[in-house]
Image (cartoon, rainbow, N blue to C red; front, side):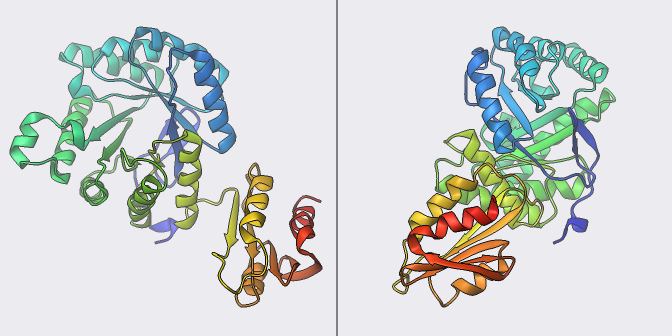
Length: 351
């Protein structure tokens, strides 16, 4: 799969971030603070901005949280999405407060006039709506029809919500179809993508902690991206949202869709290793964590694969027998003691 083979979807905008129709796959996360605590929520969003998060979603459980959105929005730089369930008044307040997007399922709002009010407000302010289907909360009749929260049931649930919006002539729609089961999620996205051209927000939900959650997310999201499916991504972990963003960028890097930040290539170490690679990698990673431009750095520990891998990187070191060789763009620039090799590498990267 290359970039030109991505599924062609409709274009919409979340704030100033283009979504779909060939735009770069955007990285999204969700705050884990109480939205009513404006100070903590803004602090976490700013941390996410520094990590490279491009769209942020916040939970809006009540009117106090909805009324906090305006101040939060004024203090951050990235687009803000309000996550709302059932209560149409919260959606109207969120739009009034200036959010850039809504995550709300119109079929769960209630009376048609309530849906119409939300849709009219969203149209007026050009606020897209994400329909978010979750295998854990499907309508009872669909569970009875399919006897299980199947991929087909998830797609049908999404189509019901879409039909409501389309009948009101609203088409700025993004869709997600998530389950904690990787294969079921992938199947649901494939089924939907074959029938519709709405942009897709992809992720595996409730994946758990590191490393389990990162593995499930990488496999599921990676499979979809390699099939050309996905316009925004969110990695869902029982961990810091900054880690979610970091994992998302690694998935995009490995699938060839985004180049961002420092990629560290390092050997796993073995009986041939004669330098402290774990310590060196930790030092290099910490020193370069704030660099956002694409950069490949190799930290290798023996004479078998080390020199070759180091030469393939933008910068690299290959250690052995208490010393290290420093490479820049494939050329040896110096040989130093093991104790000096990390500093010598960093001096070349940040002269």
